[in-house]
Length: 153
Image (cartoon, rainbow, N blue to C red):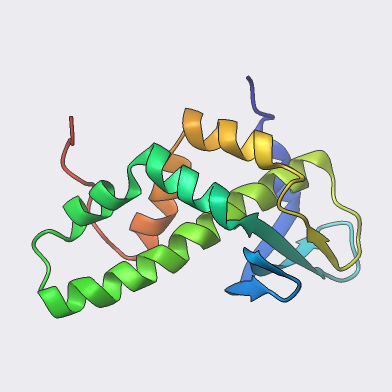
């Protein structure tokens, strides 16, 4: 499967607003909210991106998130490691939501506050995370200001 070129993303300014937080009427979903402004728009909009808990678990397992983050944090003080692990878990979900938002932006987004349901780009997000897991992990590593992990092969 090929993914659309990310060149269209340059016309948007995306700012993370908050999340992940439980979705009120869907306890098996988490939501991140972003402020999105397109150059041609007079104002920005808020876009919520939902992700299903089963999808989070499958993606974590597929990319080997636990072993990846443990390798990065191996030499860290145990107390700092626990706090960084909690932060990394939130960043993992935020990164998944960011990738889903990018898929929505590439497909075109209306200028209105909206929620992108978990099922909307689930298949594309699965392919993306399988084909390029670094798209998820690099955001986390950079946000935590961590060095590249050693080769886990």
